[in-house]
Image (cartoon, rainbow, N blue to C red; front, side):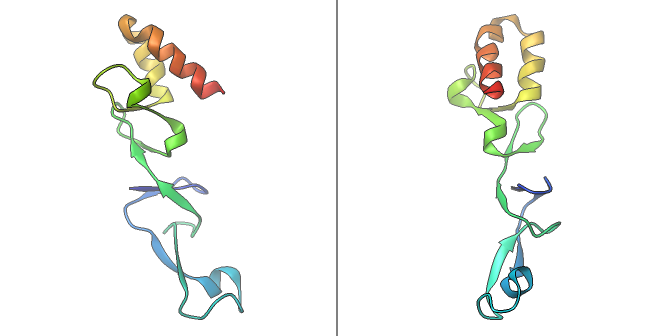
Length: 103
């Protein structure tokens, strides 16, 4: 999956966009195509799914397994907040992750 860095749309396949229509006449040949967001033709990055809420996020919006308790691979900030409140044994490690998001 991919997520648009401009509009936030989540999609499985980027759209082919004619470079000339995007940047104007004189930019490359008429058959030059770039990949873009299907919604806004903006830039995009690979998206990762939060294990808890199952929403998609860019990598800088998530914590990954090296920073999380055993058995958890990927969580968003909202889900880390929720787990801190619900699960006392994860509290110390997850509080460190919340500080990471504030940096």
